[in-house]
Image (tube, rainbow, N blue to C red; front, side, top):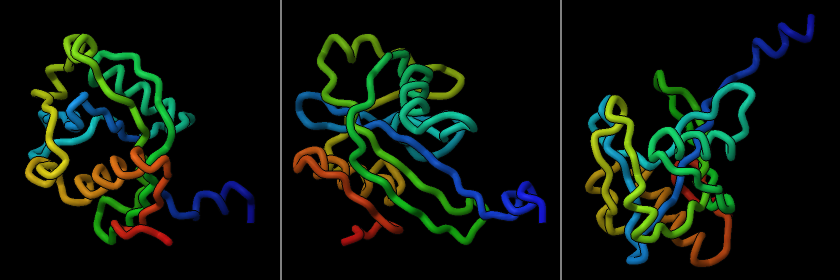
Length: 158
């Protein structure tokens, strides 16, 4: 079998890179997309030939109008989805704490994002799908503890 056929037959999965950005009060930055009903974290899908950190920086630039350097990896989550979405690996990188001046420089692309908000960690489930809210709460804890946490379908791997 030619090597190209071998690789074509392997499973594929999406990789997404999200940004944990907070304000000095510890609230988490979330964005409201124009193309779906629930809010998201700044970030997106890693494109072909792009590293997750490069995708993270690109998405922060495109979605927020900010050049932010990615901090350390806080969470990696492997998600199994038997539906049409397929399996994915989702990463959350630390974007740091945004001061008042940086917050005034946020510029959303109007065709992609309606608005943004800083949300208390205990209210993330009110605006995000539960798996993302959980991932961000784990990321906040990982930031506090200086850890990187691996999740499998929402459960911490020992």
